[in-house]
Image (tube, rainbow, N blue to C red):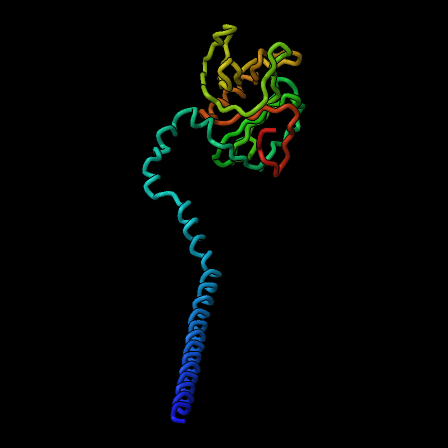
Length: 244
């Protein structure tokens, strides 16, 4: 009898111990879940914001060091050379005035009127089709004349040419003829100069203008001024003076 009671007490104690152990295990698992869940949520929240930092880093990586500029040579070293003038980008300006010409525009004729025109950049335009040359200062046409130009054997080239040489009493070293008030455009002999301008006469590529007009033009221009030679490009008020 006593033995049976002892056995029941032992089983009861073991049962209660098992229940207690199960409760402890359940509580521990629950805490582990509670602890892990905030950690997982925090990681996902940081991941959604993390691209901002790599973006800032990549942008900063593309910025060159500030001491790179120290090695750049000064621009002023070549300002006065003709090659520097040739490399300068063209800065077109618009036509602000066209000379009123009432007289017949024939070979040997020219008109010059710079009264009241402000100082500014000189641009010379030549239209081979119209057989004419115009001089613009600050966009105002101050001179216009009929020209003679290259023949079929040596046509006048088109394009934009800076004036690279001025010579008042120049003599051609190719044809050994006078070229008064010469304004050189190319290294192979193309220039603007004074000539007897008559209908039906051509040149070996140069642009001939009346003698007095050549003198006035020579006094106005400087090295580096642009000469734009086209074949049929007409200009009107408000249009930019550019090659075409």
